[in-house]
Length: 301
Image 1 (cartoon, rainbow, N blue to C red):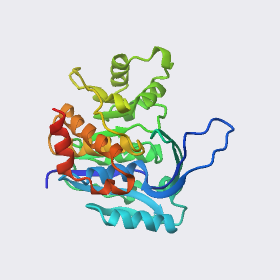
Image 2: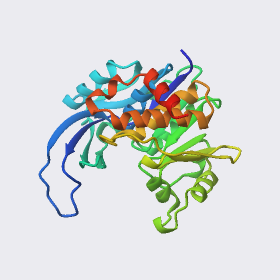
Image 3: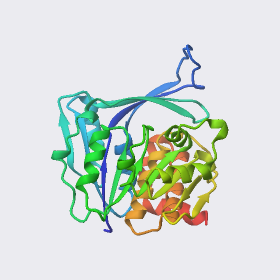
Image 4: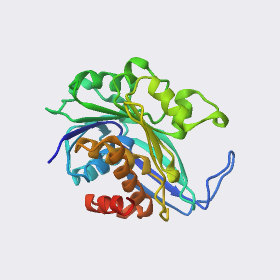
């Protein structure tokens, strides 16, 4: 099995509410149905990476409540090393996601136990290839973990949610992955003047060696460490739900980088994974395999 990935990040139980559309401010809608799903950016990205032939390690915190037990049961059924997972006497992190009939969603996250991560308790695997981070845990924890990994480790930051960039932290990041909204927030730019190519260069100037901006159904664009621009349009599929699509992209991207693929090729595999994710019913997504992702990749070459 090629390479090792450590994901340090959030674990949530997502409460997913479906309705005909998203409510407007001050509006109450009657929902169609509700479901409870494993989530959190860290957890979702670890599960996505574990579909690929790499070794995945997950470090995070969950509570001893029923939500925490459900998360533990889900992770235990994945090809993920859970030595870095700990139960604490706090409420398990959770989110409430609202999904309209067009598949568009919004969410509110409550971090709970995720904010109790103690980096002194997290062991870094020997010969770690890739470290994956997000912004749903304490930012100090992210800053500390990058000091513990070998200099040879490739560090991916999915800066979601977008927070004020720290240059010392960003300069250690090999690859920054954000969507367009997060890019605008990091750069403090108005939507009317936003330009993807300019944004890539400005984000790279913040410190990361490489940057990818995802654009949902419109694909993605990126800049390599030598300044080359790469991009792909979106893969056209019938969308059932975009919930978790970004995490599927990041997890798969990390896995194929871990396998030695260059960033532009790894991103194409990641996009194939996201396309499969959004077109697959939520309760069937765990059945998506590496072979399915590779097939979708091949079909779009």
